[in-house]
Length: 349
Image (cartoon, rainbow, N blue to C red):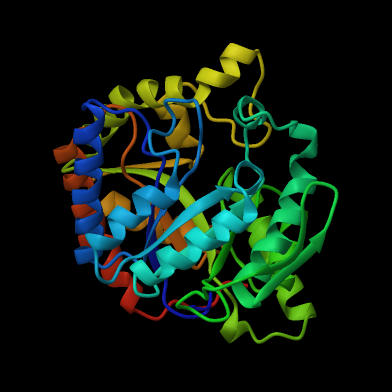
């Protein structure tokens, strides 16, 4: 992995929310976009996992990533995150091994307990048990990826002398990712050499990256070897600032309706990932970048420096943006931002 003191790297995040195309066409369009990300030089394509919601029409990350692996050659691929309580841990470990080999060692593993209690409730899981299930499942998956036998006794899972016949292509296991919403959440991934991604307001992101660096240094690690510290933002690039904002204003309400559907149905609100109803506020808050090539280039540089990030993750596809609009936007971003990834960026402390 590249350190925060090395070259800035760039990835893509995709909710694969309901767009303007029939489902099969949406899948094919996404795979063509992923082919472009591969050719353009993005580091990784990250995708979410959600269930029973138009926020995500690819609820099985492993299935979609298997297809993406066959359409790419360099781009790294991964779920951000696998919702561990929604998976049988032994089955997920097997899928991870398969994907790592199908992609020739390009898999990245994001892990989490799930942001929406409503989604896992539909799966018959008590949301209050999700944190415990997550910890147990993580332990089991790590055993299954690194040992020849799984033995585990817990509150939610019990396994005795389960033989493991596969190992991943990347040893001891593919790189891990963790989404961190609050500064105290940076301690565990820093102590376990896990890359992180952050959303939310810039000041909070900076608190998280600062906390990660402090925990990393306290463990006696070198700053040159620090995992990636990622920041995730919506991005629309167009020929002019005005054109980019018009696209965002049109697409955002469609995405917002998908994002909020289950929360509204249950009369609740997201705990951490709250977003405004209008795109202008999202841009003012720094949660989205929209503008001309020059605007995008300057905003990315300023934002990553302010956040203390070493990895910028763009969400190009959302709402009713067309395939051509997304390709144009991602193309501008690649031309303006990715060349900077080959330049030395001073460490942000």
